[in-house]
Length: 330
Image (cartoon, rainbow, N blue to C red; front, top):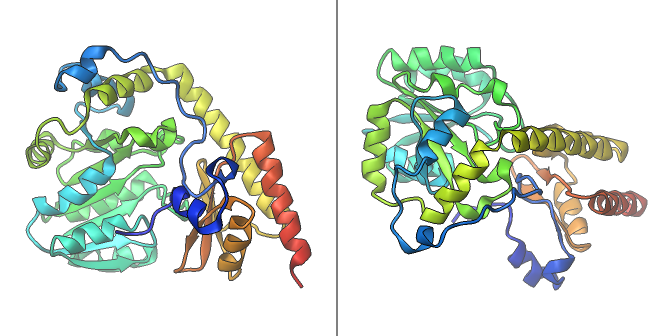
């Protein structure tokens, strides 16, 4: 299993700090979960049905004709490589590590590319995978660039797979509405923006024939009845969407300002996290963890991702920890 953020229970055991005393900033998940709607008993008692309105709510939210609900976008990341004959897959890296791993496990040749290498190598690829905005760097590619890459791939039967897991905060940059084009696949995550990662819900946007093939591969009832009720309610709450967008943007900017004020100017980020490349990454990660603040550590390059603090108290706690760190350094 690959390493991921959110491994709080492991940190509890390793550092001997009770779970309730941790400030977990290791995941790029909005720290303000949407309210859970009342879920009818029949949603728990009956098998899920696909005509309950979830697909329609998702189509409206993502501005598409059709969306396929899946058990988190991770389910699609693992399944999609099995819908193509083995070939050469480029993955713009660093990014969410499960992408390269999924294609590699399915027998494809995987090339992990820097963004500036794509134009040169694109015509040798069968599939290009891009996370936009990128996780963990926060790099955001333009729709024009992505659609130009897609056109080159699609002209010879290739795919462009765009993971928009962190796009809900900036929907104006999404290319999901173009996903009816053959060879263009867009993944959307539900749990990050809505702060409900535990429900395991995501959506795939693509041409109908590909969605049908993916649905047949995944099998029936991939999303539970209660999750379908919850997801529909959240997707339709447009007032709450705007409130969440504004709250995340303000918190992310405040987090960037906090880091900069302590001498650690963020290397990148988006409205759900900030990203810092530093040769002090391992030292800073350990220092924070011993004070009950969990960050996401990356090795290549040495870097840290900071999720959003939820409250004034959380911001003050992080600021104090940075102050203490700076005092202790020679």
